[in-house]
Amino acid sequence: MKRRQLLLLAAFVALAPFAEAQALPERFDPKRDPEQDLAAALAQAKAQGKRVIVDVGGEWCVWCHILDRFFASNADLDHLRTSRYVWLKVNVSKENDNRAFLSRWPKVAGYPHLFVLDADGRLLHSQDTGALELGKGYDAAKVRAFLERFAPGVKA
Image 1: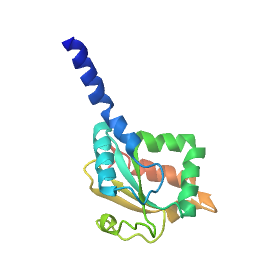
Image 2: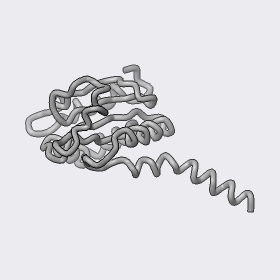
Image 3: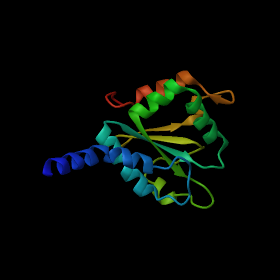
Image 4: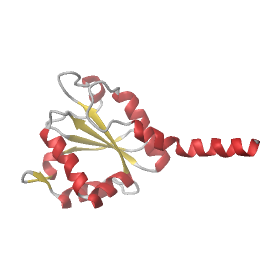
């Protein structure tokens, strides 16, 4: 019986980072607590050897939705993103601008905006996504270069 309990406990501990991943927002939600979400994202990044990308924007943001569709339609880049980063969406809107939370990083000029953090929460890079655009979408080569440049194991 004890062996079975130990195996169950080991399985729970091994799967805990994945449970946290499911708890992170898939949309920009003004009701979310970004401090709690960041703590969960950093714990997951540390457990999985990844970095965190904080995606700042809102459901009102056309380019935020274009970025989401870009990753949904570019499986290789989405795999690169999910295999090396924990993606955290932080809302900015009239309902909740998360000003206090975002004040720790450089001022954002436009949305979406991406902050790359190491697994300890240190800012590695502040990315204006306008630099990744091409026409009315995103440039696959530029997005790939960005993701590869700040991936774990690469000196930022």
